[in-house]
Length: 232
Length: 232
DNA sequence: ACTGTCTAAGAGGCTAGTCCAGTGAGCCAG
DNA sequence: CTGGCTCACTGGACTAGCCTCTTAGACAGT
Image 1 (tube, chains in turn green, cyan, red, brown):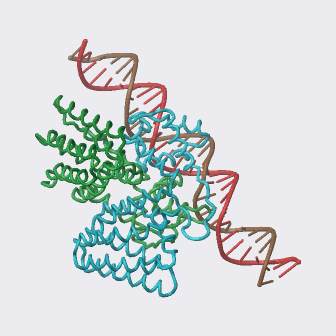
Image 2 (cartoon, protein in one colour; image 1 turned 90 degrees about the horizontal axis):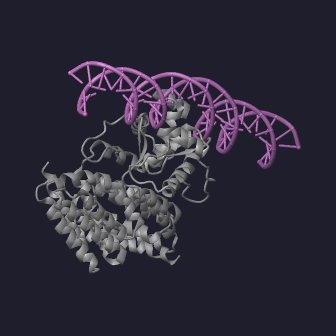
Image 3 (tube, chains in turn yellow, orange, purple, cyan; image 1 turned 90 degrees about the vertical axis):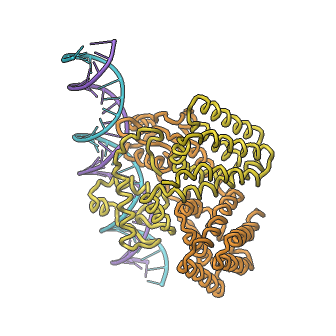
């Protein structure tokens, strides 16, 4: 989960102390071989060791709590959640982000299913939103633009049409990583037009309420959009 | 994402001010019709309006940042992330958690893919971990237990064997929701044995490096484990 | 008119100190 | 042995203050 500017210039990343603390605590957990149920050092203690104030440490602990790594209990301390696996996973992700193949893998898994569900469950309103996204993208391309906004709109419309909030949440989770690849893909010459054409295929399958065709079209689309990235 | 005791007695939920603040701010964003890129009120201002200190509000903002709802910029303020959809999704999830069908849907999507990948990519070590999980579960059942620990181990082993950190992270994301269903499912008479048998089928397919069979066996397994829940 | 520099207001970042509120171990009286 | 008390320890929250960063506007210099 990064929070940087999307397009063009990135705002220089301003360091946030609590983020560093999260990393350090994660590293500490690993190095100290702490297991689920174990307690972290007391706040006052930890704050002093890390050289920060309690208030700042508290922010880091909130972050870790939201991430599901720990469970802070009043009067007892911060206990490691039973699934410390996330800790290592998160850590791994931070290090080699941009694991394009894995992102594509996750994306095609989710979006293939979403497309199939959308074909089954879409309402007329959903379909209208999808068609609208197609129009926006067509207009953008006509204006010499890359059609990134229409592209994003389209995928959001599909996600909404699937009517599955859990899957939608998972998509939101990897949406940022996808965005980064999207910009590059649409930068390829001729790519926006191809992308739009495959969007149309997906939309048609959803319009016809054909789940298999929709999933297949979506997978083909993602493959198309992703292959250039793999050159890197 | 709740953080309560799993089995038996729940520790009385201790209120955390920052959690309430997150809810309130989410509600505020919705009611004020804020759009991506808009700024939240200044910290000092917001803190006063909500009747809390800046330090506490800062914790809530960290939580919202980790959740991907806002992006706090030094000197500027807290700007809404471009994908405020997550805000509503998260809110929706909190309200009607226990949307079992949707959880099952997401789970089968992810685990089906994970099983197929595991069949392709598993190392001998991965296989050993899977077999070990089977043994643990068999032993638990033999001792009259429900085999919940072995069950969890098994699914973790499969996830690890797929060697896809992004998908693994997504699984971790919905792991808690799954846990709640798992306990109930294994409580059904005769269910642990059935579950173990279908685990063996999955393991065999992965051993044989047969992705399709693995995915199919996993989907069948999840269906088996989930159908009783739907009675509710 | 344009352009670069300076400045001040206002934003968040972080700290230190203080007090409040649960938790749990140990002691002691019944 | 049990129940209740106490106390040390843990997190929860607030306050006051100072730092850094951002931005807009004034004010030059070109």
